[in-house]
Image 1 (tube, rainbow, N blue to C red):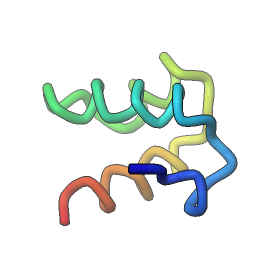
Image 2: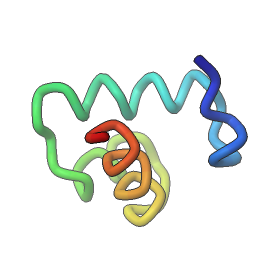
Image 3: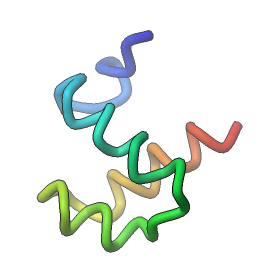
Length: 50
């Protein structure tokens, strides 16, 4: 599944976001670890929850 249409993040970074989402790592910490904006991570976390 490609989520590129939702963001300019590469598929590689999206997979890293998903790996951080599964063990309930906070969005702000995930953003720091990946090097992207917290709001971007929040948007993906909301997508993953549904």
